[in-house]
Length: 473
Picture 1: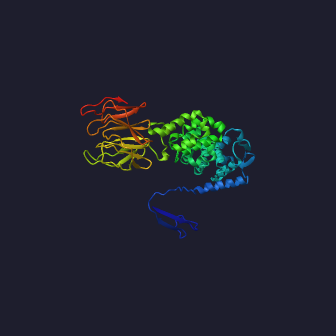
Picture 2 (picture 1 turned 180 degrees about the vertical axis):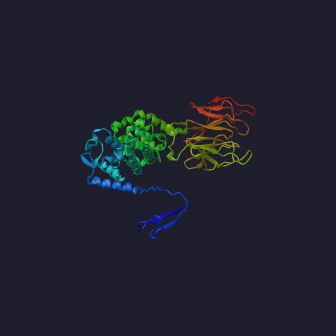
Picture 3 (picture 1 turned 90 degrees about the vertical axis):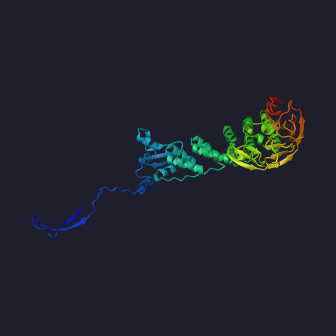
């Protein structure tokens, strides 16, 4: 492509004459490509910011203002166009045939004047100063005028201010305004910091159903259940005349069986309010039974909360590496919640085999073993140690054990010569085995279970070639 640029100087007659020296021409060689004849220029966000800044100056000097917003007797001169551009609330007010679209003074109720001032700062500058003192009123104002960005900024600010002294109040505020995410964050925070939350005034102002929701949660983060009981009693005593009838409903969510027995006797049963509440006696009786019977007595209140670090596990004791191989000393437990195996203290008498195992309360009893052992060991779950306890009166192996009403029963088995009908019972408090009425038929390797206060012995091997029927004991 050849581009010719010319500049005419001064001449009178150019027709038919040679090119005048007054005309100069320059020729530029340009690459052959498509040239655009449009240039889209943008100054970026600075232009809109400058315009808003000027409008804000106009507002401050009341220049071109065409409406006055009145809140709590305080007047705010504004521009209808700016308000309508920012808020659909004002757009509907000023652009339709409403009374306010023709009036100079528009009064708005239900909001704070200071919040309106901060709101207008945001409308005219895009900036707002959110503080702990104005966040609630600014949230309500931005919600009324449907400014979603400012409303969400207030909600985010509240999340960052969560503290044991205010999380319950913020949760109530979030529930009232359908802020599901903020309400969920508040609830999680309160659950994780319950011991501290329960010490503040907001806790005492909870409604009964709100308190029950926290007490019933397995996610309640506490080191011991005594904290929950003390929080409930503090809440009840805060308004004892009105809240006394609610005591039973609240104590149903306290895991009384998991309280330390000494604390239960001295603090719970010694409380005057509980002593004068017969409707609570059944809950107390349940706790007493659990302290005696352990895991035989199960209810929603006997399940530990997750934060305590306790959970139901499956324990495997001993065994052998292969048929005819060496006996193993290992004791391991499996947590179904975490899916992890954990090693416990090794069994001292791992050289034995075919012993009986059962759980007593929160401990494990191992008795007997081949050949003709009468030794009994108890695994203490709190100390992670095996402790030798009273021996069986009669050594045995291939027997079974189970727990009934807080006592351990050793049933049948083999003594190296014949099957046994012998039954012994172990009392943990006296650390003694006592022989009781024998079975009607000697048996080894039976299945044993309990039901309705009775022992049931099923199957087994009374001799080499036969199996026994079901027997009740």
